[in-house]
Length: 255
Ligand code: ADP
Image (cartoon, rainbow, N blue to C red; front, side):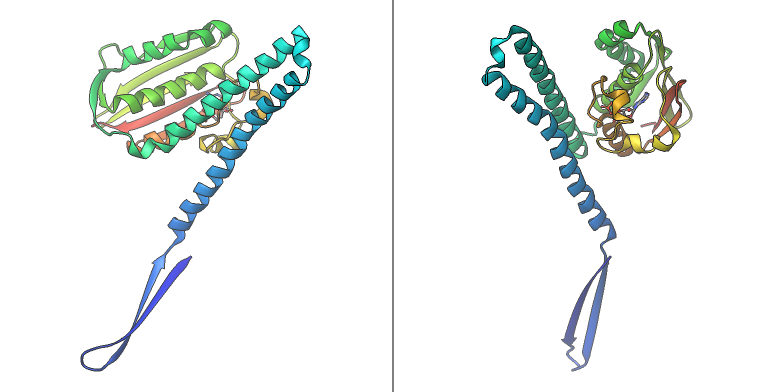
């Protein structure tokens, strides 16, 4: 798409000149289309739990609260849908704020960070009886933006645990080359079909909704990871096989 401006003017020497300016608008329009799609998707995702909360509240008010079993069941639905709304709004805000996140660097111990994330997700570990392996050298000190790095690791480890199988495992490893930090999160979980492997980084995309229906998520975790890695001028690689597991490798330039 090209935007054209034409200026026709007279010079001091009384010549008439025509100035034609051509602007390539492709990127601006693509950006605008993406924003419009994002707002449409976000509204749709927010409406789903809101409709459910509104419906069950009305049913309770119309008499269902008299039956203790119904009351308990409907209140539990309202509670979980409210939790979903909170998760969605938190992730939408995190994603929107990626461009304004501070880019200050800090030195920290990566292995301790992995351990902290594992501990924060003990509930999933216990539910699936997972083995969590922290293979990051315990002396490895990295110089990165700490909160962005923690967000990336939290989302990747969270997925590796959530989309795992009973008695499965998650392994986090890292190595430093001459100018890069390379780390990987490997799981023995459900895997991702090859035709969907690129799509999972899209905003709100979730693989096979029926498969993951019982697993909570917003479809924004990997979009956040993608934006943060891009901001740090790094790259993400994914290998995955259905029923075997997934490995996501992130490479970041050494600061
Ligand atoms: P969600 O909040 O749904 O987990 P993400 O953006 O983090 O959103 O991931 C998008 C989708 O990609 C998930 O819904 C899931 O279907 C799939 N996915 C992500 N990570 C894994 C993984 N380690 N193993 C299997 N599927 C995964």
